[in-house]
Length: 226
Image 1 (cartoon, rainbow, N blue to C red):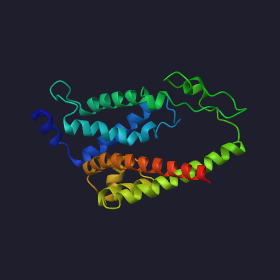
Image 2: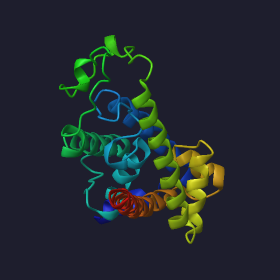
Image 3: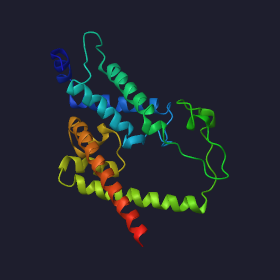
Image 4: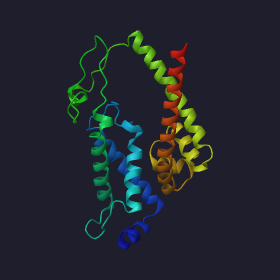
């Protein structure tokens, strides 16, 4: 990070960062809503990403110097970070994780809107279309998915148990707080610590994904031997 950027960032108080974070998360959500996601959710994104995590990554890239900010050329840090967020979201939308995996409509259901099967842009005029009631097979799959999510949360809590700040962030998220600034205020943690915790959370999530994959492989192998 260049000296001018470092000095400019140092002058931003925690309260100001909270306001910046809230503004950026609203902006990121508005951009996310305009993109096609295989998750069909503008908040919970592919690859385990979330809108909040995208904002945290943008700010982290600023602090780390990975994305160089020149306050002389672009004095508005909010505008600069919005550009970083645009880049991160567009990169994720075009990633293989998002574009190669598609969700097939249930048998007998209406076709999904065009934005879910091709175009990166959503068509708000057809967003109200939803599939009919689940078939028995789909209901079973839904139950299995819910069980998998419960197990993932259990593993994540195990991984975070030895990190007091990270555990506090996870507890706040379970209480319904999603925005970094809100988590910081709710738990009395500096907002910068919440951003740092988000980076550690990403690493923990990768560990959880590996553990889940291993458990599922072991379970599948066990069924084959029966």
